[in-house]
Length: 178
Image 1 (cartoon, helix red, strand yellow):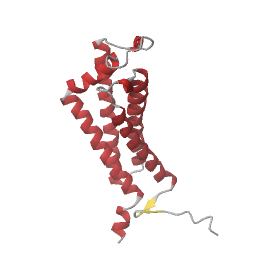
Image 2 (cartoon, one colour):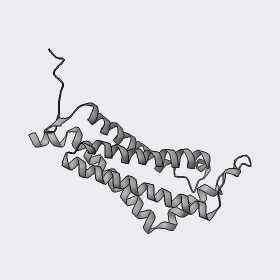
Image 3 (cartoon, one colour):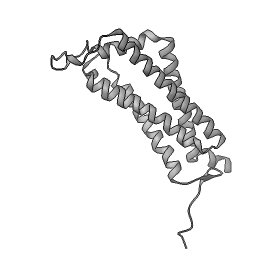
């Protein structure tokens, strides 16, 4: 019975969610490296704004320089890889019961939220008007990643706010009960 209470404990839940996120970001990174051209085309079209409504008041934002597009894409891949590494390290820390687990999970999920929320939703979606494109619109996938990262951040920080767990159960502060 004690094992079952551990499996349903908040630390285990956050550890499993961390592992799922680490796997996803690792696969995204590997996919972007091994199938470089597919997502390069995505970034290229978003930056060029060539499938938007092409409002003359906004087209000055378009970037068509192959060097700038390549630099941005490489930075995106590197950021995804670093976030995946942070989350993989967090999984190891959760397994070991290390105090660094929450911080590493939070770091990885914050990086994921920054990339997909700040990079894809704010910059891609609004600055480059990606929402106008029927072909090169990644807003749904970006929102999915922001939601996953946000839930992870909330749960990881809930672990810290609720205090240390002992044997899978949350400790209760009984000092105020008297």
